[in-house]
Length: 110
Image 1 (cartoon, rainbow, N blue to C red):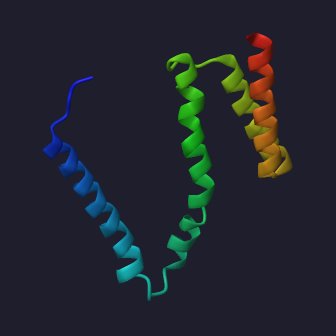
Image 2 (cartoon, helix red, strand yellow; image 1 turned 180 degrees about the vertical axis):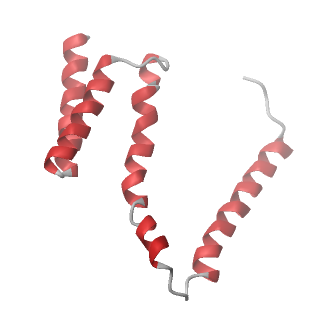
């Protein structure tokens, strides 16, 4: 791994901090005291629902444990979790069945 210049690292850190602050300030400082339009509120409802798949999808498709190669246990666990979530509409059941499938297949397939 090559050594990165200290100035470059601090420039990136400060830039990300300013960008993060500006993004939060827009919603809290500038828009916080005004009512939001109904179409925006409708779309913001789906933000929390999209976070878990956004965190999990890279771990399923490009798992670090297999050096980025997709494998059967992770794909099967994702399929079982999605199916269970769609059938039961229960997030906890989907998480636990997906986890049980993953660990069960990892145990059985080595």
